[in-house]
Length: 157
Image (cartoon, rainbow, N blue to C red; front, side, top):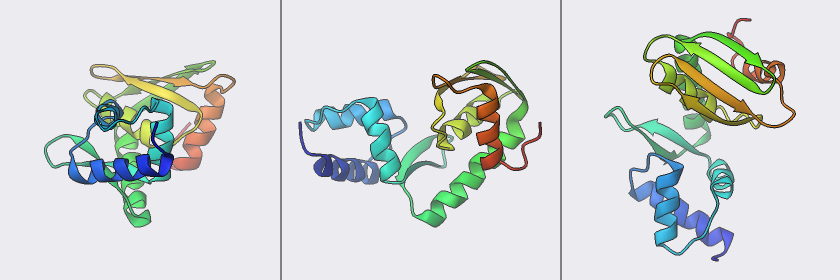
């Protein structure tokens, strides 16, 4: 297994030279270059490198290396997408269901994924108007809502 610094440089190069839409695709490219890395490690690498997703202008989002100003703009965009699409948020223990306007489940799930909430294990966007959010063990829906309101002050109860 190659060293971390070498892997980080490879991630940067791949993101700069390829249109990568998912962690799975990036993992595949890294494996072709001889890196054995878990998805959890790759997630930490992407966070460290300040990698975000940006529109490619063709209804796809791809990874890009971001400057701090770029990240703030993208965060505002995700917040806008979340607020525009979200109808309601309900939870039962560590399971959260976000109801969305028709056709907004993908953008709402992407917003939750990219807000960098450590409490979230992941999201599943329904086909049209629902997002399921799975929280880490010990995290409640109330905790999730508190973190969401810290990131999105405009979010209503």
